[in-house]
Amino acid sequence: MSDSSGPRILVVGCGAIGGTVAAHLTEVGADVVAVTTNEAIAKAVTDQGFRVRGDGNPRAIPGRIELGIPEGSTYDLVLLATQPPQVEEAARNALPHLAEHGDMVVFQNGLCEQRIAEIAGDHRVIGAIIAWGASMPEPGVYDRTSAGGFTLGRLDGQTDVATRQLGSLLEVVGPVRFSTNLLGARWSKLAINCCISSLGTIGGDTMGALVTARRVRRLGLDVFTEAVAVARREQITLEKVAGTVDLEWVALTASEQRTSLGSAGLAAKHALLLAVGMRYRRLRSSMLSAIERGRTPAIDFLNGEIVTLAAKHELPCPVNTAIVDMVHAIARGETTSSRKRIDELYENTRRR
Image 1 (cartoon, rainbow, N blue to C red):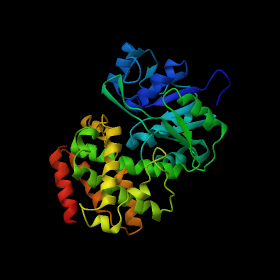
Image 2 (image 1 turned 45 degrees about the horizontal axis):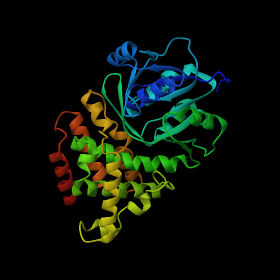
Image 3 (image 1 turned 90 degrees about the horizontal axis):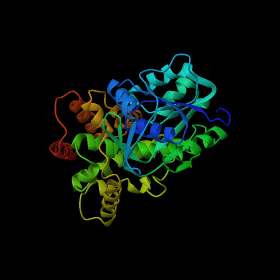
Image 4 (image 1 turned 120 degrees about the horizontal axis):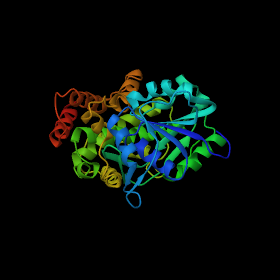
């Protein structure tokens, strides 16, 4: 990073997460350039600033936004905030602009750190796991939908000076913790997103509205169970989500998988999922928003990762497989998001 004048920061992607981060960093005087390929977002921010809601008083924060990375510019930090399907292209485009000792910061859900490490090198990648929610209801408007912060770490488990300096910067957005087990933390978040984002895409509603249905919670438990089984085969030590949610415990036992009612343990797991869903009750799936904008959904980077690795280890993975198929069908316009699709998913996976 640069000297006491502060690092030069490039935020690539100005959807809900990127725009929120860029706004907060800009507000405290950081040297930020935001980049988007969306002309409507660029115009809205240029004309009216980053309009922030749900985090303190609603306000407009003037900031710099571009439709491409300015030629000849160099940055100490490149914050990758695109959707997962665009992250590798974004990293390749930004790499020539990364300072010699700079870092790329991976905000995406899924297992994207390894993908970016192949482009930039392990030593230039910091993982940033996000534990808060936001939406962009209209171009340039950023609505914080849930509180939370970040977990930061490197693939080698080291917490170096650059990672701690990044943490100091991101504290303006939310509390920061550091992990020496980035992959374990990332896998736990992957399991959460395979449930929340994917079922939100299929159900077409906020998580608070969906999680009250027992069928939705049972599907979520099935998703977690398959993800945990794959993580074990991959020799991943799962981190507790938010320091409290133990996915090893949440995963269904063999007897719980054979029943839907009557078990005290199963009831406790349903109650936990209800509590998690209520925490993110205002969250609307960013994957669904991407589909609505005509973009490629990130399903292959979420449940698709579980399906691929399950096949590698010859593990059954019927629920995640069915979710991948249904989200792709929604993206192709062959069906629509609705509660009826959730019911179909539940019935089809029970038969399997």
